[in-house]
Amino acid sequence: MVRIGACEALRRGETTVATILNVVWFILGGWVSALAWLFAGLILAISVVGIPWVPAAFRIGSFSAWPFGRHLEDKPGGGDLPVLLNILWLVLAGWWLALHHLILAIVLGVTIIGIPFALQHLKLALVSLAPVGKEIVPA
Image 1 (cartoon, one colour):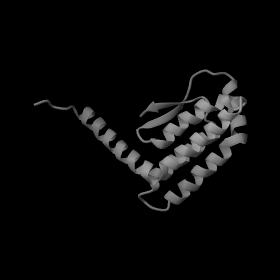
Image 2: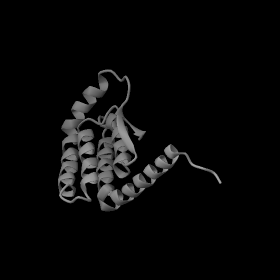
Image 3: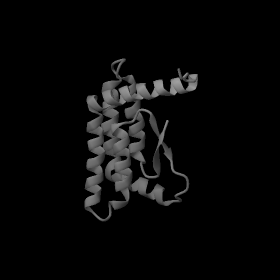
């Protein structure tokens, strides 16, 4: 019989909980948020000017579909370009994505069961304001 250490068992339990939360998240509307991010990326990809934002939009779109068990961090380096791109992003697409996540956070925060999902939407609302220069990292 193989014994699992306490840390390994805890990690497996966290993975199971994250998977369950992600499935419920996706069913209850995570797919809508992911589609909004993908739509923003596609709209930006149509023009040559919007191409620098497409990778960030698709990256956050995948995170928006399956957020539990992962988090976003700032990429090291980058200089001033990500700051400029984030300012332009805020004007072009960030405000309506942030509004989308804020409205969903308010609706989900009304119920006790919806609170973890509301918190994820609040995180996504903050990321919506400045997604360039972020990377997805396992928790």
